[in-house]
Amino acid sequence: MKHYIFIFLILPCFLNLRAQQSVSDTIPINEVVITATKDEVSRRNVPMSITSISTEQIDHSDESALLPLISERTPGLFVTERGMLGFGVSTGAAGQISIRGIGGSPTTQVLVLIDGHPQFMGIMGHPLPDAYVTSDAEKVEIIRGPGSILYGSNAMGGVINIITRNQKEDGYNINARASYGMFNTQKVALSGGMRKNKFSVFGSFNYGHTDGHRDSSDFTITNGYLKTSYHLNKHVSITADVNVADYHVQDPGKVQDSLAGEKMNIFRGETSLSVDNSFSKTEGSLKIYYNMGDHNFTDGWRSHDEMYGLMAYQVLKPFKGNSLTIGYDYMVFGGRGKTITTVLRDENGNIIPGSNGRPQFVISEYNDKWVSANSHAAYAFMQQQLLLKVTLTAGIRYENNSIFGGEFIPQAGLAFYPGNATTLRGSVSKGYRPPSLRELYLFPTANPHLKPENIVNTEIGWDQKWFKGTFSTSLTLFRLTGDNIIIKNPPVAPPPPLYKNNGDVKNTGIEFSTDIRPFKALSVHANYAYINMKTPVSGTPEHSLFISTLYRLDKFSASLKINYIRSLYGENASGLVSVIEEGYLLAGIRLSYKFPKMFELFVSADNLLNESYQHIYGYPNPGINITGGIAFKLSNK
Image (cartoon, rainbow, N blue to C red):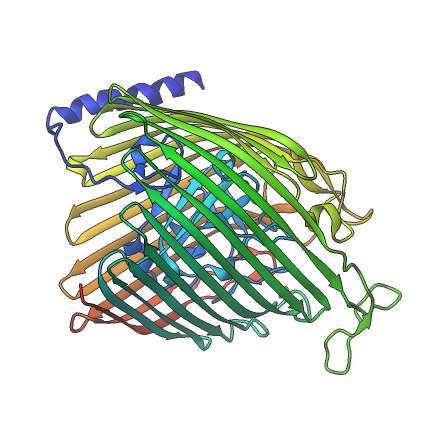
C-alpha cells in the first residue's frame, strides 16, 4: 500500500513538469468558487473532496427533483429511486442517500442543508427528498466525507448544501417549464426574480403529478418558495425566505405482495432569516431558521415534527493567505408521533382484508409523547497559504448534546500545488452523529441506551488540468473506519430486533471524475466510484459509472447520458443487506431546439434499453419512458 501512495504522490509532479514544457505558467484556468468552508474560496485551496453542480447543469436537466441529478454527477454518492416521481417516506420509501457507503435507511448519516442551515425531520432525523426541487437551486455543493466540524450532527457521512437562487443584478427574469410524459407524468415549474437598487426578490412554484408505472404508485406535489433580500449598504444585507411543500404519495408495495401499501399526506414548511456582512478583512452571517412537518398515513400513523436554531459565524482575514472561521450553532429538534389504528390480523399473523380487498384496521394508541433534544456547538477552522505552494487547514468543533454530553470533532488537511495545473491534497476528518429520537424512543426497535456514532475518514487526492484547461481530472482514494455504528440486531425477528451500537465500518474506495471540452460546442463529463465495504450498507453500489455529453450547435442541442451500476446492496426478502441488483445499464437522450431566443422545445427519453432493475427489493423501476415539453426564459439583462 505504501508503494501505491508513493507513486500517487510523485507521479503528478513528473506529469506537471512535462506539461510545463508545452504550457505557459500564465494559462487561465477556470476555477470553481465554493462556499463549503463558509468562506468563498477557490476549489483547489480546499483539501476536502467537494463536488459542485452549477446553474447550467441544473437548468439543462429535465428533473424536477434535485437528488437524482446530484446522484448522477457526484462520484461515491447514490440516491435510490422507485418510480417516475416521488420518493415517499416510511416502508418502501426511496430517496436513501449514501456517500462512500455511509447512509442507510432511513438516511440519518448524510446532512442536507438549504443555504447552510440543516433540513431534516426533527423526530426521525432524516431529510425529506421530495421537498428539494431544481427550480429553487442555483448550485449545489456536496462534501464527500465527514462535514461534522462545520455542520455537526448528521454530517457524519457527508453534506449536501443546496444554495438557492438570488437575483444578483438589477432587472428581472422569468422562467417557465412544462412537460408531459408517459404514465400521465406532468411537471410544471414557474420561477422569477427581480432586483431594483437594494431590494431583490425570487419566487418559484412547482407542480408535479404521475399515475406511476405501477398500480397504486401515484404521486402529487405542490410547492412554493419565496426569498427576499435587502442591502442596507454595501457591507450588510438581510435575507428572508419561506418554503412550503404539500405532497401525496402512495406506496405500491412489493410486487411479491398482493396488497398495496399505505397512502401518505405530507406537509413541510421552512423559513429562515439571515443578516450577512462582507468587509475587506472579514465576512460572516447570523441566521435563524425553523422547519416543521405534518405526516398522515392511512395505516393510522400521525406525526408532527419541528426543528429550529441559530447559526453564527465570522471569517477573519488578518493577513494575506490566512483565514480563520469562528462559529456557534444552536439547534432544537423534536416531535410527536402516534398510531391510532393497527392492521387486523388472524391468529397466524396474516392480514385480514376487508370487503374492498384492503386491510382492516382496529383502533389502538401507540405513543403521543413529545420528545426533543438540543445541541450547542462552537468551532474554529483555519486556512493558511504558504509560499503560494501549500494551503494548510485545521480546525476543531466542540458539540454538546442535551442527551449525550460533549464531543470534540477535529479535522486537518493539506493542499500542495507543484505547478499551475496540479493540486495534491490530503485530509483526515472525524464524523460524528448522535442517535435520532426515532432510534432512542419510537417503535419497538428503539433503545434509549444507544451511544453516538463516530468514524474517521482519511483521503488523498490529485486534481489536474490538462491542455490549457480544456481537460480536467480528479482522483481520490479514501478509507473510512468506525466501530460504534447503530444497527438493528438481530436484523430480523425473531427475537424482536433492537437498535444497538454493534456496527463495524471499514470502507475503502476510489473516486474519479473528468470534464472535457475539446471545442466550444461539445462538453463531456464522466465519473466513477468503487466502494469496498466490510459491512455493506443498503442503497450503496460497489461500482458506479456515469458519462454524459452535451453538444450545442446554434439553436439545437443534444445530450446523451449513460449510467452503469454494479452490485447494488439493499435489504433482501429476509430483511438482510445483500446484493439485490447484480448490474444494469441505463441510457438516456435529450434533444432541444430554441425558437426564437426565449422558447425551447425539448424531448427526452430515459432507460432507452428498457432495462429491468430495482433500487429497493420488490420495487422495479420504470422501463423506457419519454417526456416532451416547452421552456420559456425572459430577462431584461
